[in-house]
Image 1 (tube, helix red, strand yellow):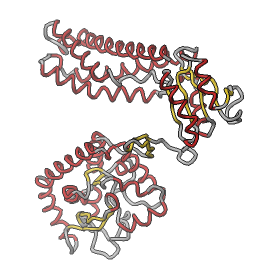
Image 2 (cartoon, one colour):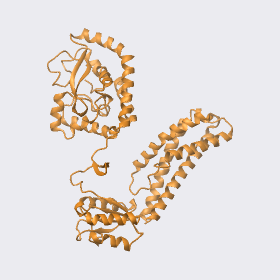
Image 3 (cartoon, rainbow, N blue to C red):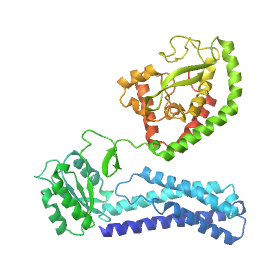
Image 4 (cartoon, rainbow, N blue to C red):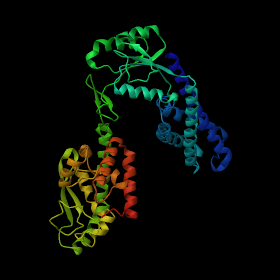
Length: 468
């Protein structure tokens, strides 16, 4: 076990060392290739820049920058990790390079340097992972593992460890009350769970991990296992028997001293994320309502009044966060009618006014919802709010429909910029919208919100055939 840990520490050091070497070689290569167009200062400043960039890179990657040594890791995970750690590195390095007046920082080619570095590092790490897998396939850098229990989760765990010989796991066998037919015949039966401690003692220093799926009622057998593992450098893992009814990823949390499993991780549950999102909502809605909106209101308001009698604003009760109802504001795009609260707008809808087609196509009709954002009923980005009748109907026929109400509804959302805007004629269309709303809730980041806003503006300028 200690040998594996030492090997992985050395591996991480070698990977980071290779990253730093590539970073500096690329910087030197840019200076050689582009000359004065990239750097025109004295040569010593370039070397000082290399040192500064190397330090910034190590600060951003020393803790969690390397994951390719993990037993099971996909290529896209390696790529995402490199990209994720490049963001703070770019920000830190730009700040320090500008602070200390490094001349190559001002070059137009410096942005190209970052892009080239990203590509090179991804290729380097993927190649490193490839050779590590070859090494593990031949028996190097492996973890010896024993299993205790044989329910469905343990069977899947066994196959996850052994189907890919490059994972770095070697299952030595399993403990169960009696030999089980759940494992392949070649998996050794090591005895009953109460004999596991004796087995670990006989193989001291060889077994790295123990996975236990015994039910909690057998705590008298589980506790001695935990105590032995904790005192002899064997990592103990408890495998809860929940996947027979929950076939999805779950998250472990502590509620006081009580361990609980949650089925969904929501970034906006964190107070700091909610504060960040609310600050952005207040600033953006305030700026818009105090600058552009008055002019839009005058022009669109006059057009609405000339096209049909009735108010400029259309307001309707919608379902908001935690199912709370609120009045949602829009520019009126239809003639006043009795079906507005029960019937969706459709293509060639006869209820639409002459100006209605245009303001719906360009999303101008949604702009008054910045009032809702400022009031706190909505956010700039989030799942679109539905009329009460639709919420009631879809909640009965679409699984997890109400999950989208865990956050504030938005003027625009992930579903709307990924092809699920407009009328939902078929049930599968609403199911697609709901699945994207839930994805947004589970993967929220501030940068994702900014991307959705960009896509919304882009689509509004170019027009959307589903906007009606």
